[in-house]
Amino acid sequence: MWHLLEPLHAVLYYAPQAFDQAAALGFAVDERWPAYFAWRAAPLGEAGAGEVTEAFHSFSPRTVERYVPDAWRTAPPAEVLAARLRAVDLVYRAVLG
Image (cartoon, rainbow, N blue to C red; front, side, top):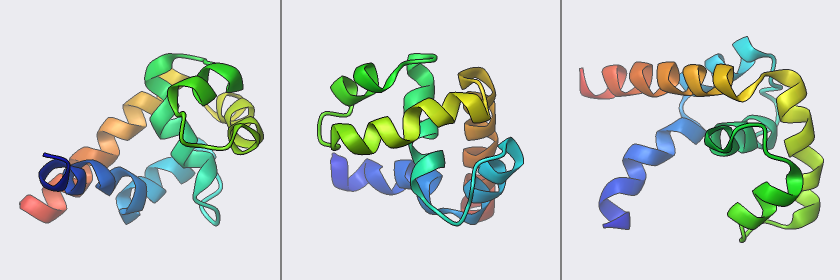
């Protein structure tokens, strides 16, 4: 199942449309991680680094601590979620027509 669905999910983290939406929110686009953690953690609300570390158990706690607090200073989770939906919509329209 992962092999079938991961390509649909991964577009959010690699497509130019997603980088554009992240930049519009104020995230740096010259580095992957600031927007990545915001995209992934936004459904949790304004979760702190500890909560995100628990949810994303495969990431180093130091990495999460480095990026998550700044994510919510850049844009609140509700704005990140709206931008995430716009990004995915734009990508799927570009790819699927």
